[in-house]
Every structure is written in C-alpha cells, then in structure tokens.
Length: 434
Image 1 (tube, helix red, strand yellow):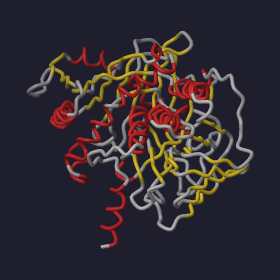
Image 2 (spheres, one colour):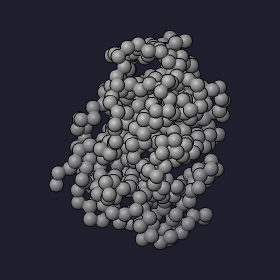
Image 3 (tube, helix red, strand yellow):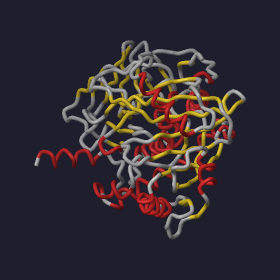
C-alpha cells in the first residue's frame, strides 16, 4: 500500500488569495511574527479590542507550520499534572493558568462566530486513559483541580478499581468509550473536547481580518524575519524590508533562528526547543473523539483523534517525538525518523480493530518552553516584546486564550499571576545565578 505523505489538514485548505510578501519598509503599532493559529488569534483580538494597526509577518504561508500539522484536537489539557506544576510554580499561579486555558473555549466561540465557521467545531468526548490502578488517585486529583477552575470533568474506572467519587463502568464499556480494542486501561479522565481543522480556521481568520480591517491589518507571507531589533521602537527585518512598530508579539512556536538585538536578553532566547511530532492517519470507522493513552513504564504517551475527513472518519495517531538540536531549522520535507511511524503502527495494531498499515503520515514542529508551559504576555526585561508562544504539545485553546490576554494587556488590563507569565523564566535565571 502506498502511504500518502503530507498533512491531511493542509490538503483541505480553501485558499483563494495570493501570497503577498513584504517588499518595502512599513510602520505599524504592533507587528506579529508567526502566521499560525497563535498569530492570527492574537491579531484578531488586538484588532477587535484595540485601535492598533497590525502587521503580521509569516515565514512561509498562513497555517502551514505547526497549525497545519497537528492532530486536529481542541482540548483543555496540559502534558503535566497540576501537582507537579504547583510544586514548581505555586498552586495559585497554576490554578490561574488552568482558568485561562479553559477560557479558550469562549475565545473559540467568538472566533468561530466572527468567521462563520461555527459548524466546523465538532464537540466530542476527550479522555486520558491509564493502565495502572496506582495512577487512579492522580487522575482524581487532576479532575478536582480542573473542576475547581471551571471544567466539567469526571473519572471513569473499570470494575474492581477502588476509587471513591469515580464513575464505575465495566472494562469493555471503558474500552469502547476510548475507541480501542486494548483492554489494559483501567481508568480515564473524561472532559468535553472538540475536533476541527485548525488550518482551515486559521486561513478563515486571515481572510476575515483582511476584509474586516483593511485600513488596520496587513499580512505578509514568505517574509521570514531574519533580524529583530528591540527597544523603545522595534524593527522586524525580512528580505524585502523592515516593519517598525511600538511592540512585537512572537507567535513562532518552535521556529527559531531569528537574530535578536536587544540591550537585555529576552527570556525566550535559548529557552525554546523545536520538537518534531510524528503523526499517522488511517481511514476507519467510529464517531468523533479524542483519547490519550498513558502506559506504565513509558515516559511519553500516544494520542488518537477521530474526525470526519473527505466523507469518511479519519483516525489520526501521534506520540513519537524528536528534539531538534538548538539552532537547527526545521525542514517539512525531511525524513527525520522513519522508525517513529513504525512505532505508531505498532501502537495502532494493539489499539484499533483490523489495523494493518497507515494510509498517510506527516510531521510538524512543536515549540517547548521550560517546564512545558506556554509563554503569554510581556517579556519582563523588554516590555516592547510580548509572547503567545510555545504549544508544548497541546496548543489550540491556549493559543486562543493567549491571543485574547495579550490584547487585553495592550489595553492596560492587569491579570493575576499565572504560570504562563514569562517572568517565571527570569526567576529561573536568578536561581541559576545564585
């Protein structure tokens, strides 16, 4: 069987506009660097909620980076547990971060309504499954933390597992809810989630902003920023020219390599890792849904998304990752690790009935920041630099929430301390120096 290479989400893009590159010097109030969901969401809220003039610079094409190479999930989740994060950052900062992440659902609704794409979000159940009875207590604590922040989560356990406050179901029913034939899983954290094509939404956002704000929004693609000068005025320089602005928002996720000139080194410098995530797709059956599978003795996890694709359900599976050496530029056409797809196939054969081989495969670049926590807001030492940066594996709702928060901060709104505050990296530097 021939395996199709390339993202299924990008293949569905309905692009109708030409790519316009920066070809002269320009000025604006705000320049946003990065044309994925984080960059376009930030532009959306800045244009909607302020009177600022915005220029967005994208190195390639809108939605062709991490946004177009994702698993197609909308889920309020973190790759680390609350208790683990709170031990580093404090409970209230983490709780505020959870509340901000959950606000991504409201921001999602606003974006979908404005772009006329409300029907494209398919509501589904999100589940995180474990195979060890010893892990159930941790799931219950995580449920309580999310619910305290405003979520509506439950823990389901199979018969024979002692777990006060959990929903008890039999093993076959739990496996059915997870969409797997593998009976090893004994419990799952369940919460509302959704599936959608984030690349389609991001392109729709670009078209909407160009139409709704022709006097205040300009978008330049194939305009990689090679040098960024920071100070009272910022200057973002690409091959065709320089954009001068009052401030800049970095929404570049795992894409690094930009030369930065600044009297004080921004906290993001040296603190963003590019990580290649590998995914495979199989045309299958079953209702839309999202599941993550955590196995005892394994440091990583696998995730699975079911959603409609060209008239049939598509199962997308990911998990294997490869960290890029610092400074190495990601190449979407390169074969980074063929063994990653074989590992996905092995997991899928244990998980899906009748699975033999993947129909398609793709990879994308994720951005990981220290602690696996997104950066949102102003740099503590360079106030003209702001961030909505670092998916850390799960980024859609956090990108939307981050874009809204950055826009409100430009208006002067103050927020409670949050785990997403870039100032946490400045504190880390002080600790290392001492």
